[in-house]
Length: 589
Image (cartoon, rainbow, N blue to C red):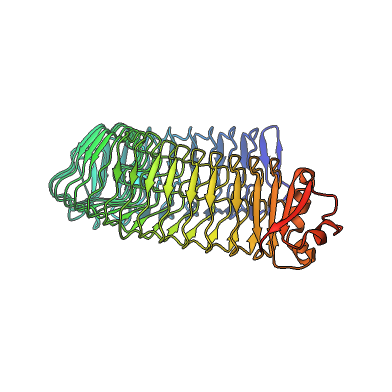
């Protein structure tokens, strides 16, 4: 477009109608620019990151300042937006840390999301009567902002609009506003029942709902008293209140919504009243100092990530009324103390990642519910490095992907007959697991299911299994022998690769496909038994072609055992002749 920067001055040709997206983005040497009267739009991120830009004059021709147009212009101290502008885009001036004053014209009707967020030097703002809506995070992080007046035209505002405004001491809503009112530096709905935003630690009496993001990012909030009238704590209400140490939730509260206390890193204990029935997604996630919590019998469900990252939480008690433990509900709760955790029979679902990395301190058995639960979700117990044993109830039908992966202290496990599917990596890297019996109900052993189980010495594969998938037992370096039942038709890619202690293999007639490197790097292999009904070795050869290729380095030391009466045919076949230590025909096929 012919844009130039000469001696720190930006030059835009006359007749230009739009300053394009990212036109001067990252021009850290740009100090000033004159925008010609022909320009109507300043495009997305047009001046983003122009950290030396100190002043700019926007002509009356401009109607739109797009998303992030001046974001991170950290030297910009003041700006006057002309009356022609009707739209200030998302994050248009975010991160302008030197911006002290701004004039918003009457032509603008909405302050979009994050428009002035992070303008840490902005001390005051005059909001015109034309504004009807404040977007999320509109002035978030304006730490020098001391006062704000909300005009009567505003019909939509959220608490996050002024989150992290630590020095905001005066909030006044026009008395003529039909939607909102102000009391003691708090914004409430006109009826006084919903708190929108508050810089006061004393919530007005009569409030029944603490609205979404009301105290979000109030880093100085150390304690707060909720009135008995409160029945609902909204989404992200106390999100990031890093100094909040304690809070008493009134008995009338029935709902604690999503991320309500997320990131309250100083809170140490909390009592949830009997009126609460569900702990929503992320409600207490990343409360890293939380040591104890009392969960009442009224709670029936833990939402996704409800207590995720509560790294100081030492104990939990799950009541008989809980039916679901959500995804990542207790993941990364790394301080849970060495005592049994019992999941009651009422639980029907343990979702993915539910206890991932949570039981690193647990040394005694984990007791799963003995009825109802149908599936152990993916990564449900992955990374529980000190979990030694677990009892899986007869109700379980599926063990999800990576359900117990990385449980490096798990020594034994009994898989009940109810299980029909063991998904990929379910027991990967369970390095202390020495033996396992797979029930007849299981039909498929998934990809890398037992890979890197370096302590596994023996395993019984039932007749129900038809496929052994890729890397199923890869790197099981202690596995000494394996009998592949005559139900198996396929042995997948690298299925037993690097089983360096494996001494013998029995392959039945049912196997029609052995994929590449299925037994690669099995350096201790001494005996291969082929149990086939074929009279000649040709068809058998097709089935074990990759087996012979991947074992070519080791076959000179291997005894090949074939069916009775077939020895001569195998010994004189070009594929087998001279390639094995010996070929013995002693198998009664």
